Image 1 (cartoon, rainbow, N blue to C red):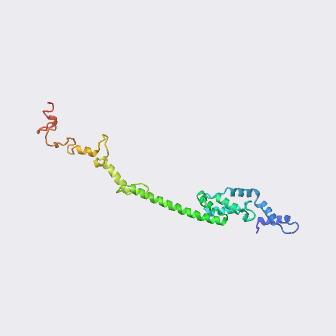
Image 2 (image 1 turned 90 degrees about the vertical axis):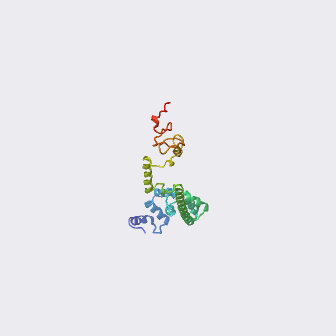
Image 3 (image 1 turned 90 degrees about the horizontal axis):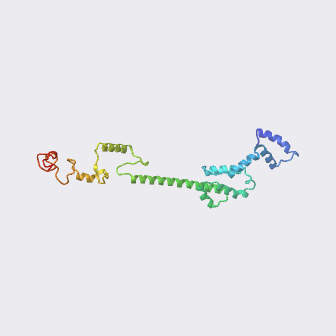
Length: 240
């Protein structure tokens, strides 16, 4: 299986290892091969990477694939598979995201293949639950906006007026500046009396408050003495 430069290396090292023309032990070949192509520093780096491996933002399938690749170079995972199966499961569980770990760890699965499959199922369920919760929040937000929106106005879900309502709002603003607005819609004035109360006491004809008396505006009747023929500022009884 060795090709190219590796084949040339093997032809040279084979003569050194096969001194008595017997079979070369596999462990002997592996030691020499690792010295050449996979030195101790690289193996230690792989071992450290396995110890620090976390799922993070990857899927279970991607995490399991990376985990298996690093286990092949781990000293702990060498030898009989049954000897490190439990350790492998515990290490895999420890690297899961917290939302998945809380569901997987209580299952106490000690077969690695089964653990990976169960973790994938939990991951799929978590995704469906997250989507369902997001849909419910969105629906609740629309219901709240519709409930709080004033009657006769169409509100967008993001809380902004549509183009038609903005034009209507601008028109109302101009009407108020021109004095063409409904006094009944105003609130309390600075004096503490509502505008509606003032409208009931102020005459719409002359703009003055003369109580329940009939308005004399335009009748050439004196506002002071009530006699016909002169106005208030020329009233002869004014300074009496």
